[in-house]
Image (cartoon, rainbow, N blue to C red):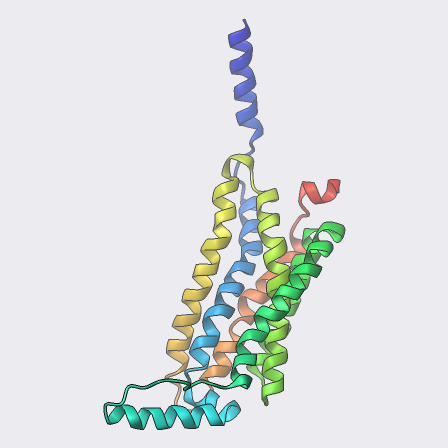
Length: 238
């Protein structure tokens, strides 16, 4: 009798684990857009900084060094030392990580106090604003502000999206769905490289704008989707 009751208990526990539904899949896919944007923002900056029109417009000193290096390489001189030694260019790259670190500290309190949905929404709005500002940038200040906004989006999304996915996923599929966030980061990085590869071919020289503004696509999905996402049970209980 005890053995039978134990089996029944095990079966009940396995059934309690839940199952995959279209609603769960849609919720997790929309939330995982945070990973796509994160990977895209990491990958896109390196490609954009290698585009001549972008450097010539915002970082002319670096562009000049790059042209001089191209001439040196034509004479079999392969010294690339300090080619990109520009504090301004470094600020453009690192500003995302600095603001992301600070935003993460704030996002933990927002996610715990207000819930996962508001945190995802704030991250999506920051991503959307940053990609729009970056794609329409007219000077270096606009570029850096755009990167700071993207960093805020990274901080909030990286705090709330993995938590949302783990709490929303059925117990038996929780590991797979949570790892989907890492997969989406890779997809975003790969997409950024493909986008840069195609946009650098544009002869008019505005390809970098398309690369930076394309982040608005997953950002829009994340922002609009967060309005319809259900709150997680853990968040409601808290």
